[in-house]
Length: 308
Image: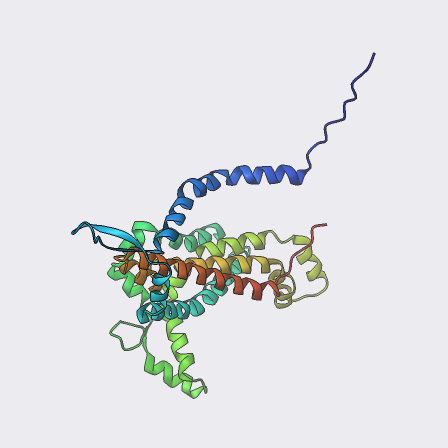
């Protein structure tokens, strides 16, 4: 009597099970992308090659006419659009490093053992909830918000705790130029927005700090390492991958925020649908290039801990 040879069923490894769980967790998002966002993206690309104009055959009606790359060429020939792009980059260069450094500093402070630590963490995350959706619109038109944003009076009519001339005098005595003064004035006046936009980054850094193994710090303490040395030799390298994550997140958040000058320009010029779609895709490609450059630069300084 012949017996069938049955091979033992190989148990799936832990990594394979985790991979399946990850795919299952992201499946609703993938379905939403394919069924909802992907058709919209395809329509947007197609619209960028068409011009919305009056119909030649039916007076009083509008129609889409294929015009190739004319909308893209016209976008680069529009001075206001170029100025909006440059203004967005200028805002990005000042805002992203400030937010990342500030959120890292707050995360390190909130990771210390202290009384009421959970309350302080909640306080720093509340602005993230406040600065979203309808509440953000109400906050933008609120007089109290304008008062909170006032830091240094730069002569434009706003209230401030000190005059920019006083700051120029102080920095001139220290040998700094006017560019440093302008940067400091911008940072101080934007402190309210910086706190608002640092909540998510702070939580990411906080999770990374809590993921560092305690025995590593204990070994450093036994070897006589100071707090400063511990931060730069252990803490900073271990959380460096999250610096790249937060930098990319902050860039995307800064570029796509409703207060971004480029976003405002494209939104205000939505009348010509094809032109607006072309500007949007140019802006999208520029954002991708900026993120790729930042990732390439930061990747050379990132430390990845080996688990094996």
